[in-house]
Image (cartoon, rainbow, N blue to C red; front, top):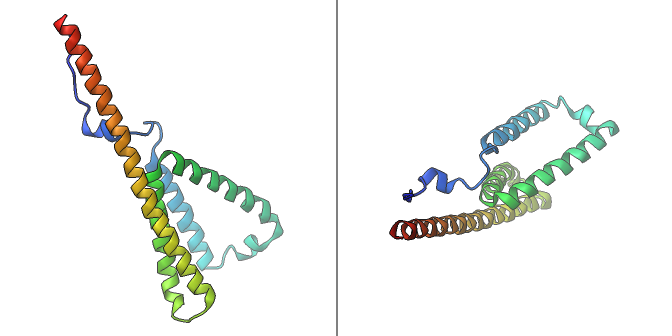
Length: 155
């Protein structure tokens, strides 16, 4: 007779493939962002980025990042929402320093960041709902397996 074993809390919440390590991707994006931000603040990359030779690599890089973010949103909506909220918070922090000078562009930047933050909260909420649905399906499957095992044991 096969005994029913409830899934551990960690295994039950693990709804992505174990080969995918989200932490390393986040570290990679953070390092790239910090390197780009530090070089930009020192204006080291300005001549290089303004050259026409950089047009295609920037274009294809933006397309690749867009596809990666779409896949992140499609498969890991909660984490995409967390990334979106973090990104919006950074933009709001940056815009907060320049809004006091006035100007339409600064106001639009702040408004767009607020909108992105709202979308991030919505994606987090949708992601939690999806995770709960997957967890409910897993629990139902385990209950069915337990009932089948009990039926086999009774027979």
